[in-house]
Image (cartoon, rainbow, N blue to C red):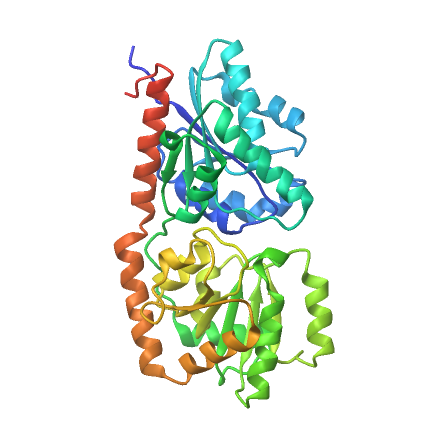
Length: 383
């Protein structure tokens, strides 16, 4: 009897459809028929868009409780196949994968574990402890490979002492960009928000959380208006800083200039309406939103942190900004928007960069090779 392919299970804790979730959704469409995404979430409704994206790729989606023991019980039916690959996308997921590995070994099944790291945050003591747990599992646990989406993440693991043979650099990839009618996209956004469609629009897309630094976008708008440069600033996303941002916008009298548009299920349409995307994060890996914007020819002005310098060559296919001073961002954005020829050239080169180096198919093939190697190490040969 022919041996069945190994079941691939992506483990991820989620509160919506953000960068890591889009990576998992894209990968789930490159991994074969028996691919599953097991998502730890507080309620299934918060990951409804993530679920739709996974199912749209032909994979199976499972909502799991956030409790590790309850999640493990829910996963038992998925572990019933003879060979399983577990790809953990975070610290809690790595702990759950570790529990699954031991359960499989007790029941005589073959299982291999990989960890994919999308980025480190160290906002507080709690985050630092989580990071330590993740790195300790990758160094001392039964982990076949640690997939790092940027060279800076790989270096963090290396400095912690994770064996070199486990470390793999596989950057994120994106599908071919959709063609978006900019006039229609702007018209729809203007209708929804009441924004002036005849002035430059500056976008931000991501979680409204401390490490993403969305507050800089409000200060950026204030700086530009003080320089008599009219603009609209749009923040797509949700998160713990939403109330504070609303208060800041109100206090600075920017209600008609800065718009919190909330979560968007149509990111291409949002990006297509923008003249420039700003990424002011304190830390990043290989952010999907940057790859998506560049693939559409949208110029990106980003912080020179994490994996962003690996993607963007400043003043060539994007703009990198040192530090996190709103004035510097305002200067870079204003100079770009006042030079349409440069704006167009950067957008053109950005598209070329993504097409040459950041294909989701290439990412999928590289991951599949690691899956095969991991199974080989536990005595399973793929058909």
